[in-house]
Length: 138
Image (cartoon, rainbow, N blue to C red; front, top):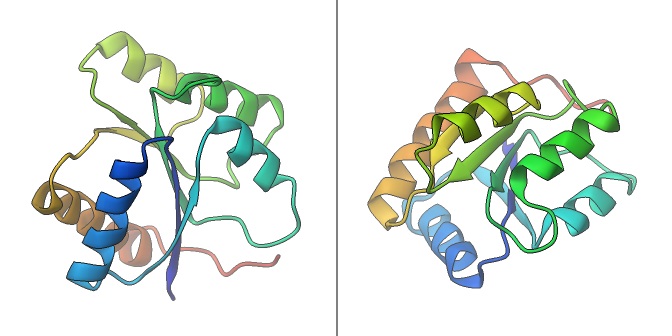
């Protein structure tokens, strides 16, 4: 089953890094992007399939990653969504807050092709073999 992966990040250069990495390394994902937290939350209200995993940037204009997590919890969208918070911060308090608000896990935001390929490969392998993605009913 092909994994549906959404990236929620306002940084166009980072989006290009993700797209190029997925293409260059042939990672088996259906990739999509939301440019900020508001767009992401609005998109979840539209009919269609939910992503299998969301990589959510912490630092974005408008709603930051932990605010998006709080809104997802308020809308009772967990456990239907698996969200990973990406951050460049090493603050334990941020990680604690993200996990309390429903993030499945947090990662340091990869900034190179190789680092991104490594983390995406591991995440995809985990979610498609160990976690066994449920078949979509939507």
